[in-house]
View 1 (cartoon, rainbow, N blue to C red):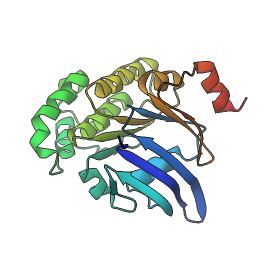
View 2: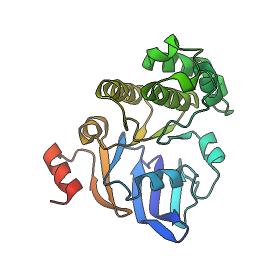
View 3: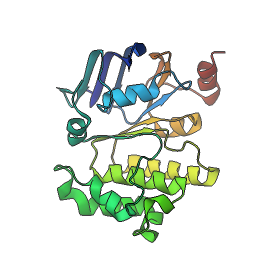
View 4: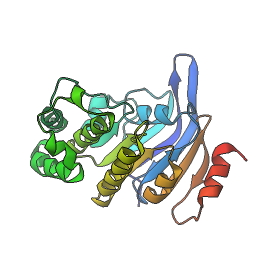
Length: 237
């Protein structure tokens, strides 16, 4: 069985700076994939390149057997590969309802709009309570719920989350972690960047430690690895 997403020998960066140095990874074959590692070492650059926000310099990116390297973000999203970046980048004057409706804009998502809306409300019941409230009036955690909910409205075949719990209070973070688990249990494969290694170990069957723009360590499905060993790899002890 082939992977849904295959990244092979990927090189990418910004201007004269190369961030990714021949990175290779796979996703969507053995469950969720977790990415972790020091800040500034290429995780976000990898996600941006996969989703078409940054053009690769070399290497290949294949989604469902098709080469998507260098395609536009819009074209990649239309294939069902959906990326929720850091920072819940939403239109502040739109209501929650309007944001979710925008998520269903793509042709492949429109026939599933009603069922996906029900799924979003089930996973994030707080959004139903604030349905007509403008995004700019929401808390950081609520805006992150809207971001992920809007992505679900796009009917993803693979959902990428870049540090979904970053900067959130512990209680809200726990709520979001539970929501991400529910999304996974609903059958949507995930790629998640997260600094909370305990959460990644619970969520993911396949982990990659990204360091200096390369995969420093791959933890494969079925490979036993405890929290202490992960921390040792992370900090280089």
